Amino acid sequence: MSGLPRLPNGAVVTVGTFDGVHRGHQAVVDEVARRAKRADRASVVVTFEPHPLAVLRPDEAPGRLTLASERAAALAATELDYCVVLRFDGQLAALEPEQFVRQVLLEGCQMAELVVGHDHGFGRGRSGDLDTLRGLGRQHGFGVDPVAPIADGAGQPISSSRIRDAVLDGRLEDAAALLGRPYSVSGRVLRGEQRGRRIGVPTLNVAPPGGKLLPPDGVYAVRVEWGGGIASGMMNQGARPTVGDGRRWLEAHLFDFDRDLYDREVRIEWVGWIREIRRFESLDALRGQLARDRETALAVLGQGSRTFNDVSTS
Image 1 (cartoon, rainbow, N blue to C red):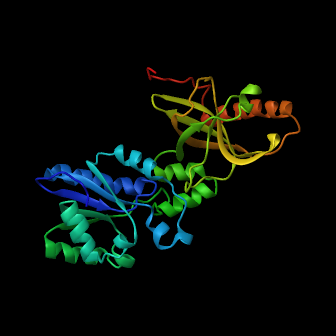
Image 2: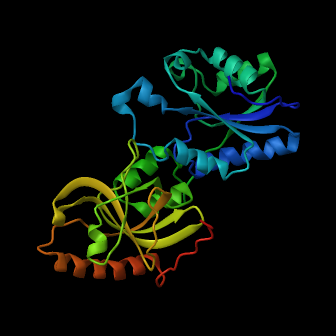
Image 3: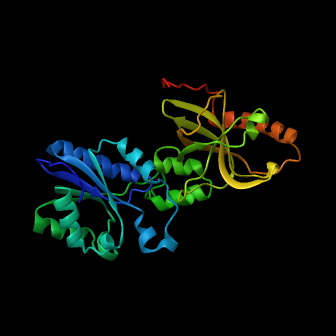
């Protein structure tokens, strides 16, 4: 089921949706990697796509903090050896806890030890809990260890739902503190209509990926990263009322940068809020506001204009 190679000493495994790969998730992953290294075992995370709620209760499915590719990139930055992504469907959802442990974790992932969050639920209807796992561990010969919740500075447990609330409220500093990194989105740069270039503010345009949770529309200070490069800038998120475009875009202007990134995959980090979107009476008025936005963005970013560093050879 997992496609893993033969693991002579088995694996230390953890299971979850890991939406956001936030600081709490990272603590679980770090514990898995530490235990695996100590026991000369492989470290494995088992996760799901799509989000289970998108299958079980679509009307309640949350916007994603990390889409599949973003979550994979965040997990790849850890010390894990393997990430197993299971297609979540009705058949998987119907597995009883014992079936899930036996078929997926023991047979599929060669599990010798399981590390889970303190409130982990699994199996049909999340009917399995920590006590269920410990009983199955005694029956099948694997260890089970929970990781205590990670709290923020106020003593509140870090969770994906808290981060979603912060993003929706536009509290990006709070979201970044809980994630352990700035909130971001990845997407491909599309060819626009060159309006920004015609007024001296060239932009790169990214269509918001479906299912991605976005903060409130507005103008933001951002950082944009692509393969081999990074630059600071400002971004209009939402419609473009001055030019009569009601479509929702991520439209970023990069400071001191004027190169072709069309069709490149970029990652955009929200750094801070600048202002709401509004309609201007003329392009000259818009141009003047964009100049002021640039100064505000530089202040938010806490530095002078950041020049790009592109090490690609293409």
